[in-house]
Image 1 (cartoon, one colour):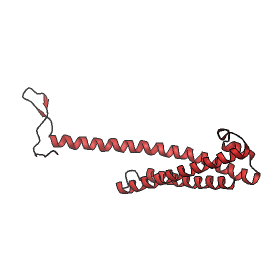
Image 2: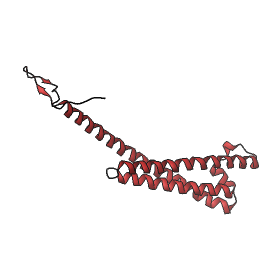
Image 3: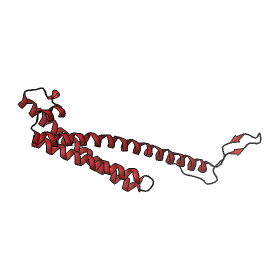
Image 4: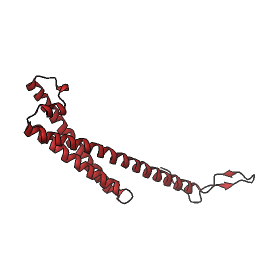
Length: 160
């Protein structure tokens, strides 16, 4: 049971780190350089990989516990384990469980906010690129008939 508790505590720490990174990212939109955002992305990926590794370890522990208690591993949820554990373990396990639930809700909320901000920034960049492309093509001009026609570029450009 101690191993399970240690894994859950590590998961809580990793989720707290992930929230901190997501909040830093959220606060930095429009201020952070691309390299800083890439560094944050790398750190977030590291947290997710470490969490996945811990999750695999936790699943193996639960399977061993299921064999010991002679139940199917699918039936052995964290709530069931907490209810069957000794008080010395059930209370800290419950605290970890509650904290993880709260952290997951927070992570989802901040990640959704970041996703919206990133999508908005992407639209802005696409719009800027489109505007610059139009400038290179030259402003629209009017034909003798008074209809708008594409102008020709004053500066020659080389296309790759």
